[in-house]
Image (tube, rainbow, N blue to C red; front, side, top):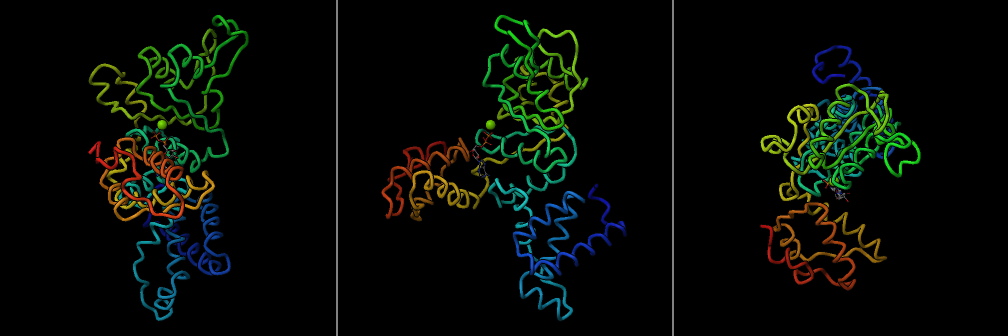
Length: 346
Ligand SMILES: Nc1ncnc2c1ncn2[C@@H]1O[C@H](COP(=O)(O)OP(=O)(O)O)[C@@H](O)[C@H]1O
Ligand SMILES: [Mg+2]
């Protein structure tokens, strides 16, 4: 499954076999079906190999110019878009074609099939939950449960029983035994968001659970074996919290064998326009309207703004516009929120 066996003759033969099989069926199948096929292939082989096979097939059977070149015995022209298309097709719910997002996609495709523990870091609204979900969907555990929990949403004692469950009579109101998120995620993936907000006492319990592969529900005398792939996320810099003594160093190392860093929206270049188009269409649909057109001046302002709330903030902005701007006229700078117009956050 590793990527460094390109020189392996078996691997090469497989690649060529797949490429020629896909190329002979691609015209009959069409793009969508070829995508589905690629997913099936990814189940059988590793993602990198399947993507390479499809890219090769697209070169042979895809653009007419490439096909003509092949017919004349020339090497097909290099096709950067094939790679970007095949890459982003693996992440149907995540919009992004900027170099930084493509680098994230490549990393996810590598690590998703492993059971490695992943820490996702990124400012608020950069899509950490989407990425966690994508890792699960691209993993061997995809048929199992995906369970997500936000550590910042609960006071400490409640969070403990949310995560680990409790036995009957463990505390006032615990009138029956209850399973925690760890047990609910059995044979699947558990995603803990805002893990930096966890109290030091709970950090200790989490560390012990991960180390021992066993949890102890509140009030229980026996441990329960767990089988979960663990993903966590934080918009805080956990290394910084460790330096300040607010986060356990041993837990930090336990959580972060693989670190995925999501770029802020302001570093994603043209992704802003792609997101604007898609999010704006979604927002318009919810308002039962046709999607508005943004004037070049409005787009220029959106591009200049710093977006401290990232994609979530952009989502709010386009929702507001979709609801307030009269359909049938372009969106002008005066329609945008005061922050965006003032370039605040810049
Ligand atoms: N690249 C993206 N493409 C499409 N939607 C996105 C993208 N990134 C974030 N979103 C959307 O923005 C919102 C915030 O994303 P979320 O994953 O909750 O961010 P975070 O957990 O980092 O705060 C969600 O509605 C999500 O669907
Ligand atoms: Mg989140």
